[in-house]
Amino acid sequence: MNETILLVDDRKNTRKVLTAILADEGYEVLQAASGSEALKLFKQRQDVDLVLSDLKMPGMNGIELYQKVRDVREPPPFVIMTAHGTVKSAVQAMKGGITNYLIKPLDFEELMIVVEKAIRESSISRQLTSLKRKVREEQAFHDLIGASMEMQRIFEMVRTVGTTDASIMIYGETGTGKELLARALHLESSRREASLVCINSAALTESLLEAELFGYVKGAFTGATSEKKGRLEAADGGTLFLDEIGHMSKRLQSKLLRFLQEKHLEPVGGVESRSVDVRIIAATNLDLQAMIEDDRFLRDLLYRIEVISIRVPPLRERRDDIPLLTDHYIRHYARQYGKPVEGVTAEAMSRLMAHPWPGNVRELINAIARGVILSKGRLITADDVFEKAPEDVGAAGGIQAQGLLRDLPEHGVSLKDLEMELIRLTLDRCRGNKSFAAKCLGISRKALYEKMNRYGIPLS
Image (cartoon, rainbow, N blue to C red; front, top):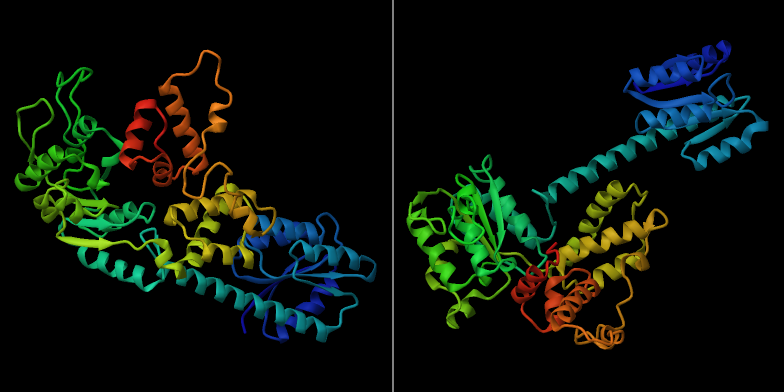
């Protein structure tokens, strides 16, 4: 036994007797005659396994010492020695985190029982914390989190194909983490020191997407006052992640296919060809094979990109990962918002496991962030996580317009302003879930992005 005990008492005789007793049991004893001296020793020694302190001392008392120790680092077990008259203070101190208390005059057998129990439980707690950390690390992979068989297979696939330069197509619903998967593939590759450049094909009009991808020269169009490098060129030596590639027009698909075949590009308005070395990772939530049959996607482009395909399962197909994801994001947002949240109630977890999660992991993350912010204790309740569905969102997802039209001014309102306000209201009621908002509005996600861009509504 080589545990170290920091003994704090202003009486020399008491320190001498207790040191002898503890040393006989195999403990190393550090002595301090005051709270300030004990605090200095605690800062110097990282191996203190237990603090045994008198409650009443000149200057800094035992409870004040505990508070100072806690400010330095996570405190070891802290036992207070107190007289009968101050037992109430010691009991109150236990609510603040102090491990236990002993009543003077000390019963030395009881002293050893309390000390051994505190050190043993602390050791077990540290081992459990270390084990939990190890398990979390094994279940996390470049910020992707999952213990389910489906996610472990994806992790293994990333390790296998990430090291190659093969183009990859990622399939998955909105919010499943396709961009995180692309980042993991990039970090596993030899290109990891170069840039990972991302672009969302659904968020831009055809002309803007072309300019963003291929760049443009000065004077290429009105407003092109200088040359701009495109995302493909910016990713030279690295990786380009093309999200929502299924929303790209066929004309741009053809231009991208030509680039993939020749590894050369021409900026918009330019004639000079530029050589670019870039790995392409694309993603979509659409059925590209069906789009090929409908003549909306180029078969040759799919063959060029889909050397390897990876499907990211929706959250409803890997419910076993919900507790793990919940734990991870509770710790993340508890730190971010400075809240003492440690977990969720049994009812909340039951609701989390049963929820369909149409927005997948992104929706879960938002729900956990909301729960942490609204929580009033150490456990998040079901009411903290799940807000009541808005009354004007019908079962079919449509939004009733009566409330929007109720306060029309006498001179009327333009269709443009009405559409803009309807989009804002829908996004607000759908908590930013653009797929659900587009469904409520009866338009495609691409059309929603185009309208948001046109009306200056933030895309994120």
